[in-house]
Amino acid sequence: MWCFRLLPAFVLLALGVIFPPVASADNTASLAGFGGMTINGLDSQRPSLGGTLTVDLVPELQIVGEVGRIGNVLPSRAGTLFSLGQTGLRASAFYGEGGVRLIAAPRSSVTPYGEATAGFARLDVSSDRLGALGNLATTLLVGYTGRTMPVASVGGGVLLRGGPVLLDFGYRYKQLFADDIVQSVLGLGQPLRAHELRAGVGVRF
Image (tube, rainbow, N blue to C red; front, top):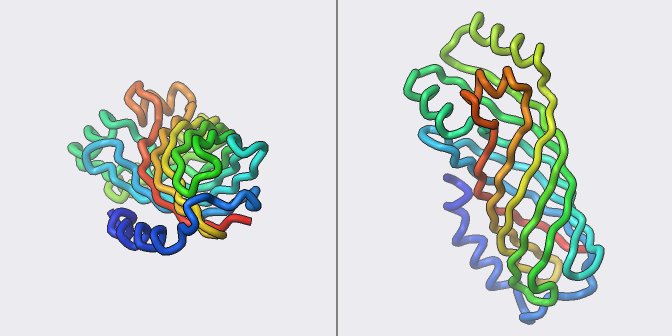
């Protein structure tokens, strides 16, 4: 997991920039990019990436906008069975969301946070082992039932802030609200979802 190999570098950067211990109150917005890994089940680790924009309403509450790609949205049971069956089936999604973030210690350089967002996602399904006909059938199924669907997320993490620099380490749970047919075929009756660990870096302005 490449993002976790970079963790020591992020920590060293944080230690170098977070002085003084109280975060500046002049910054009311931030823009950050992040990378992460989905950890849904057996052979389900897939990279995720995206960007987040936040704007302060009050010091303890921010508006959040986020776009990105979820590397894997297969639930653990489906992902495990597809993996054991050597299908090579993959399901990812591009998404855009908006919501709110609660900041526990707005005037501190190190603060936990929690957030909830919702929006829309576009599902992408493929396989490198089903062949052209298998991929065509999968594409037709998803296209017939609809690739675009609502998505909702909850999560939290820790922000490290110093001057204009922002570091973000967190977790997100994302769930897609797919058509019943897609959920039955791809999720084996379970919702399409992702457990995501992420790390990000950004600027405050």
